[in-house]
Length: 177
Image (cartoon, rainbow, N blue to C red; front, side, top):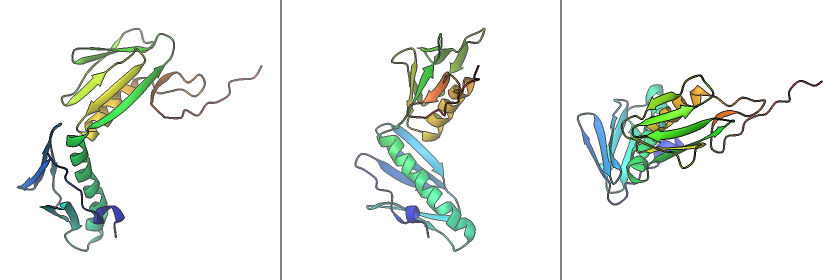
């Protein structure tokens, strides 16, 4: 039995949740998000919140139960508070800058890396070595952060590269003379 799946997802004031034709739509102050519903799971929207239960007793329904409840929770959290990922750039000459809907990265390559910011995602650079990515959709925010990080993953010898704030980089000792 799923411990996560048993709890209903509370719907705060100012947020509305509706189900039509196999799609759960949640609207709130930060926008609107939707989720395609699975046939193996039974969803109910009432005053207590959104309840997720397995529709039958198959192994697949039990496997989807907790994940679907978490996806519904992400919808509600996204339209109320939103999600944020912060990246830190370490390295001499490495910097980032937002110009309109483009993120310009200087990462030691012979050319600058220009990335188009996806729709529904907001990018800020408070300083040249910090990138703040925020938005209502957790998947889009995390995916864009991963795409940025992929350009220069942190290396273990000097720690240069792009890392998530709070991420620990295991440092290695170099060659001994």
